[in-house]
Image (tube, rainbow, N blue to C red; front, side):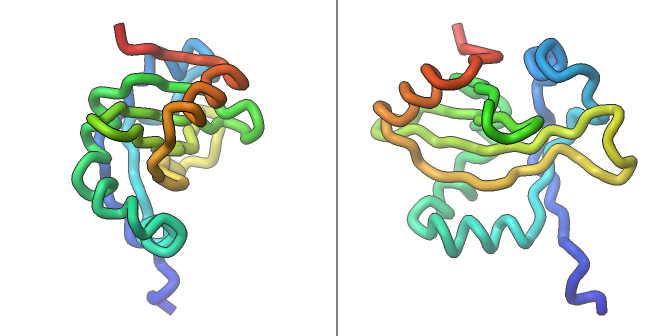
Length: 131
């Protein structure tokens, strides 16, 4: 039934340059999130959902870091520092060679402590760092 159709919300445009130098040509610069992933964030990270609603566009448009997720294929962490926390947007990127109807999409979103952000940076490759 139509209940299973994922509702897709456009979140903005990715800066593809640092991504393409690592992964190759992206299919699109569009970033989306599905209602299923929104539910995931509400359920798994309920205290962070309000931050997602408020700041997800800012994270996409003005990231502090874009970090390659070495454990998951074609996945990056896009992070943004706020006054008393860091936000982490986990994004699956879609390459030119992937299926036609796919777009770059948000897997999850949560706050991340400074020390955990440092671990991410140490264990993975930084693709972009805000100057």
